[in-house]
Length: 596
Ligand code: ATP
Ligand code: MG
Image (cartoon, rainbow, N blue to C red; front, side, top):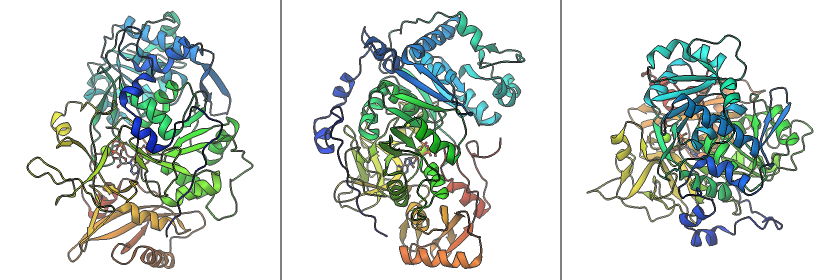
C-alpha cells in the first residue's frame, strides 16, 4: 500500500518557530546554536545551568518547570525557582558527602520529583550522572554500577531492598546510598535524602565546567547485544536544545510530555534536559501505562507537545483501530495537542496515518541513538511527512548511505568507504562527526568505540536508504537484516505490511536459516482483541502479506505470539526471537521486559 504525503500548514502566529528546512539548514552552524544558550558567566558550559539558572536570571523563576501527576491523578506544580533550589541543595549534599568532581552519581528511581533534583543537582555540581531504569533486577543494576564506578546511588527504600541490598557487598566503590521519599526502616549503610536536603543550603554556584567535561553516562537498550555505556559531555546540551526546536517544535512554556523512562537516553535528553533549556513545563507521569490514563493526561494537562515511542502508539492503536469509526476511546479533548513525535523503533506508516485520523495530528518519526546523544534525522516540524520515512538530517547533521560489504556493514577498502549516490539503494547509515552531543567513548571499551569510525564517518550499524528528494527510510539494523534467495529484506518492511491487516497488533520478523534460500522470512505476530490465533487467520495473513510484498519478501511462516520479547525501552528483540527459534543461547537478557 502506498501512503500519500501529509502536507503541513505553518502556524501563522508563532514568530519564534524556525523557518523552513532548506533555509535553516543552509544558514545553521553549531556555533550559532551555542549562542542560543547562555554559557557560564565565566565561560564554559554546564547542562544544569542551561536547564534551570538561565530562566531564573531572565526573571522566569515563577514559570512552571514540573507538573507531577500522581497515580491518583493529583497534581503537584514545581516552579523553575523551586527546581533550582532543590538542585542546589542536592549539589551541596554531594559536596558534603565528599563526592568529588567527575565522580559518578547513579539514579535508580521512577519518575518522581527527587529524580529531577538528583539529575540537575549532579550536573550543576559537575559530577557525572548515570540514570538506571528502575525496573532492572539486581544483576543488571550490579553490572552497571560496577562498570560505571558508581560512587553515589539515589534510590528508594523499596527499590534498595529489592535490588541493591543483596549485591551491595560486591560494590566496594559505592560509598553512599541516598533514599528518596519516606523511609520506614532505614537499611544499614543508607542515608535519608530528605534529611540531607533539609540541612543543605538552597544555593550552589555552578563551578567552572568545560564543554568537554564528562556529564552523562548512558547505557544502550541492549537490543542487539550487551548494553554499552556511552559517555557524553556538557556541550551536548547545545544539541539537545537546538534539536528540540527543530524536531519537536518545542518552545517556552509549552506543556510537554515525554513518555520515555528517564533510565534511557530519550528520557534524559528529551525527558529532562532539552525541554527545561526551552523553559517548557514537563508533565511527569508517576503512574503506569494505561490507555485511558494516557488520554486523560493529554486532555486534563492540555499537553501541547508529546514525544513517545512506536510501541506506545501501537498499544493505543490496539485500543482504537483506524477505520473502526470509534475515534478516541472516550470523550477526550485533545485540542491543546499541537505536535506528536516518536522515536526508538521504526514507526510503521500505518501509525502515522492513525495519528492523523484518531489524534487529529500525524506522528513525526525521528531517528537517533544513545551514541548520537540527540535527534539526528527527523520529520522536521515545518516539513511535510512521508509516512514510513524517518525524515531528513537536521540542520548541522551530515548523513550518508554507505555501500555495503559482505557482512552487511559499510565496505571499507584501504581505509575508504563509498557513499551511495543512487536514490533507493540500501546501505549503512553514517554521520559526519562534529555535532556537540556525539558520544566521546564507550566506557572502558576503546576498541569498540574505534570500530565505530571509518574514513571520517561514524557508522551507525543501521541500514537505510535515501529517496531522490533526500528523505531517509529505515531498512533495519545490520544485525537483523535477512538475506533470502539473493534479496536483502528489512524486517521493518515486512512488519509494517502485516500491521496493515486489521487483525495484527504487532509483528517481529526474523530470517530462519534455510538450505535453499539462505534464509526464509518468519513472522511472529500478536493479535488485536477479538481475533483468534487459528489456522485460517494464519493462511489469510500469509496471503495478505504475499499480495502486499510479493513472494520473494513475504513471510513463509507465521507464528502467533501475544508476548513478543521487548527491551525495557519498548523495542522488539528480534535477536531473541531468532535465538529461541534456533535453540541458541539467549545472550544478554538484562534489558528484557518482564517480571523482575
Ligand atoms: P543496543 O545498541 O544495545 O543494541 P539499541 O541500539 O536499541 O540497543 P538505543 O541507542 O536505545 O539502543 O537505540 C538506537 C537504535 O534504535 C537505532 O540505532 C535504531 O536501530 C533504532 N531506532 C531509533 N529510532 C528509530 C527510528 N525512528 N526508526 C528506526 N529505528 C530507530
Ligand atoms: Mg545500538
